[in-house]
Amino acid sequence: MYHKKKILFITLICAIFFVNTYIVSFHNSPASSENRYEPAESISLLLLGGIRGIVVDLLWARAIARFEERKYYELLTVNNLIAKLQPNFPAVWIFQAWNMAYNIAHEWDSPQNKWKWIDSGLAFARKGAEKNVHSGDLFFELGYMHLHLFDQRYFKFAAYNRKQLLQTRGVDNFEASLYWLRKSLLNNPKRHNPLAIERTVCHALGNASLCAENEGNTEEALRYAGLALDEWKEYHKRHPEDTAVDANEFINAFEKKKAYLPNMKEQHW
Image (tube, rainbow, N blue to C red; front, side):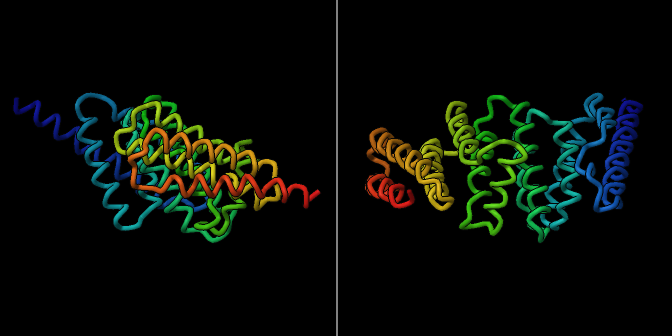
């Protein structure tokens, strides 16, 4: 028994040394390295035996500490290591996606550099979704990020981000948001209220209409306004007792919008 404990202790020390060495090497690497957020393939060595759970606990403790210290780049590496060790744990994919798309992107001034990290965060979340095919919570985060990160009311370069997503990924952020939000509802999210997600779908359609209108695409604005109107009507029918939002107010607003948008289209022509 003594020898077994001794071997376990030595293995744990080696694991801690490996993690520390890897993180330090990352921390000292050039800031311009394009691959710095990719985990080392050799992490598979840590998958052996019961030491895996102990190492994951250590990494989570370090991740929390680095987040509180605002050491986001070091947190990047720690989260990637956890994702390698716990690929079927949605929380780490959500945590890392937000770290890249919000925390690290915020550290940069240029829209190009901001977009690089937003795109990386979204890609990381999509990768997590591939490994967690029934995670309603991860799907919700993807849907919300595709809506929130491209909202011009909150982000100075939201229009630039939307354009980049269309050009580099061939993806419309609103369509992506709606896809993931609806997929979330089909997979029983545990951390998010389904009614709140349904309302988010309604808001996504409304925001899409407003964005299309601002971009001068009246026909698309009219289409989304009709979809938003139908969605709010269905929501009110399903949840007439819901007091969290005044559905009738939105129904009236989109009825008016459907009435005046055709006139704008005629004036444009």
